Length: 381
Image 1 (cartoon, rainbow, N blue to C red):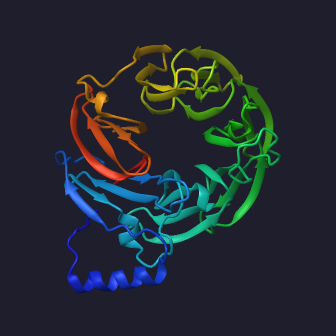
Image 2 (cartoon, helix red, strand yellow):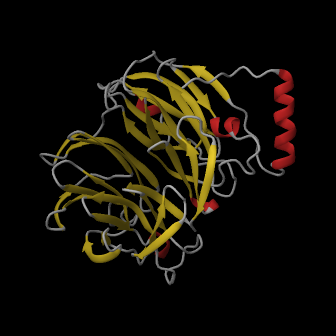
């Protein structure tokens, strides 16, 4: 994947004219690039990083790191699609690649943006209200939706659902009702699991994982787990790992394990989780557990062994760099080199930072990102 940061003067003027005509009252971000790290030659060409952007600002952007040239490219969606109004939109919440296409879930713009995975050229969009996360199975994409408006309300009435659309036509052809404010979802065999959070309904949180039969696309049961559920990831042992945010007061964030053969919660791991990435037997996680009682964040960078259910470490950063990270917000592990990527959202309204660590937890390099860097996806050759 080859990109260049050199833009001729007349081309730049032409692009600026298009931007002014198409993007009135919307922030304009220029593409930039710089080199960090060392070139690599594996089956992975690079990775995309979706920057959420502060809610209401239409500042979600897309960055790309090219392993062949060790070059980090900022704001490539705008560069590839200079005439698209509002660029990516408001709050990038998830990004995945399926086949030759890339799908970015733009939460408050109520859409899934569909692009060519190698050029980032826009293909189209799927309109889904208050959409959250996306997964794929066969010819279909599945997207969780809060369905209703962004609103903190203990009496919230709009139940959430999973939308299904055809990846060829981008047409929605099904909905399955689940709990309130459904977040991450995971597919195991012919079953889909959905974490119901009830996050808008504080203090009346949801506490279940919905199980959906994919053949009928109907909810078959709900598994009681814990309040305010968020993340889901299946491992190779038939286990589903689920995180709970807790209530930020007396009920702490924890990690739970569901046996997908019995659909029962079988273990609780006493470690807080904001986000995680599964690589082999290692579940890499971080937590920024806010406490309204202590009025501060307690930060953890942990690894859990999913085979033994043991906490391997509560700080995989070994060189002290964690002291420079204000708000960890994204995490990914290179499947070949085992390099660990952690992002820092800093103030939430200014550019963040991406850190690359060795497998031993030593900082290799860092780079400036867009606002609130959050979601990674690897691009394979």
